[in-house]
Length: 428
Ligand SMILES: [Zn+2]
Image (tube, rainbow, N blue to C red):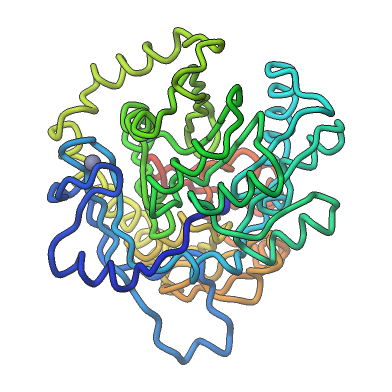
């Protein structure tokens, strides 16, 4: 849920790219086909403090391209990962469903890969230790690799060894020298956040033990497109992967997929299993060719497949605004639930401010008392909903709608209703 990227002098690079056109971060082909253009948007995870309300805020183009050669859907990099990630507001442990997901993963990995006290597990973007803590409890040695000092500090305080740094080839060599090579190298919701994708994947190749396994989870482009999840596009997410696109990136660095699972997390994710290409002790399971064929059959290797997405996104905006305009004209009150990155893409793209949403709430105390970027909607503590008795609660992290609608079920006491915006506006 956090990211991890190699630091590089990208300000100069970006300026050059802007003057000369963009190129694909995976294969370097020139990028010209637009996947979707969401206009100008501020950085989605930069909440505004009260004393910043009178200041201007930078907005950047939020336009996703699709590469005509390798079909990686991607944004260009406008902002340094150093700026985005050295202090990160997302503590993974705040989401109980995510911590449970991590525990189930650890149970699976320990059993499937026979990990014990002699093994070594490393996690890229280990955040506050939400996942590695489960390995520690089961006596499997771990190392977290996390660039955001504030969340890494929380992990270290919990007794989870963590090195604070961005990952790439150089970091991989240093870590291998200081800590050895991992039998399991994992990263959840990090690959999408990597601007220098080739340096990152090359680093994994260099760090992994000869018989080691890599697992990574990231949102699946197939589900993003099928379910209209355009709000998961924001500046911190540089890449949006189909299986065929990610497989090409790994193959370029001598890593082969040997299994893949489709998961319900984050609106539909992939969990890929990779190994060194010459490690045939781990045979390729049937799910790998099956998913590859399914994506090819759906058109993921043709530009035409990507061309209708923008029009569907425009239609979603019109429908959400129609609902909100109608609710306000009937004198109803609407508030938000959550202040996730995806909510900010939605609010900014649709132009939803306090004219529609009185406030939003978030369980993360780090965000409370601040304002959403760009739209400047106050972020309050969840109790505020009980106090103000709104008619509608718009659930911004729609992937957690079941968890949230259970936790806030009391809005039914006064006839309040939940609304989800994605895949289409629906009153629950
Ligand atoms: Zn490409």
